[in-house]
Length: 99
Image (cartoon, rainbow, N blue to C red; front, side):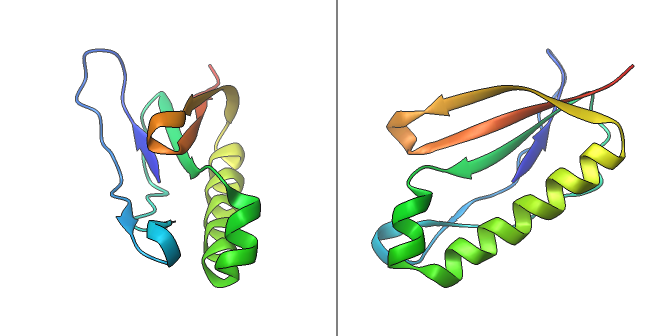
């Protein structure tokens, strides 16, 4: 889920496993301890369809992203952008540390 990094620094990425129906991405390796200036929070496309096709997986994503956002917002990060990757059916919120 969250991955961090700055410019030329090596980016840390969380792994996304493929599982669920029709290869839906599952949440894995949530890291709430990154201290990078920028953190990307990956989310899958088609969440509405996931709610119908695999409600347990949709709940897993919802609870994981809630924990990520509340943790990083409490640490002073703010959302500054959303990047959509249609080819890989996912997007990412870009969080940046204030200050």
